[in-house]
Length: 68
Image (tube, rainbow, N blue to C red; front, side, top):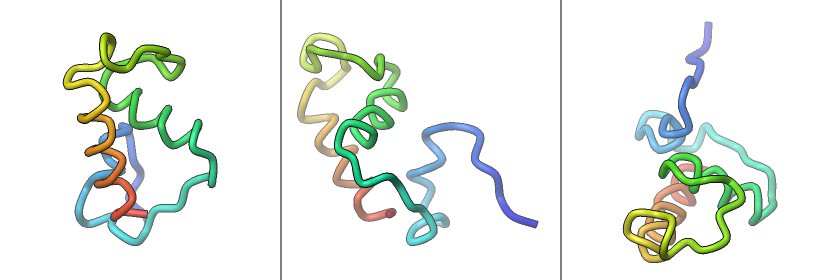
């Protein structure tokens, strides 16, 4: 049996490091991060629509890159 993910935040679980694959598409990956942060996949103004703005998104992306 395998562990099923139920939330976007599961992608950052340490025990899943190296066991995650994603589509090689910046739009898709950034969209996942935005959804995890409570924003719309189609957010067009990150600084005003995401808590912590662009810096927070970049930090979350960097952490995700270590997981994939």
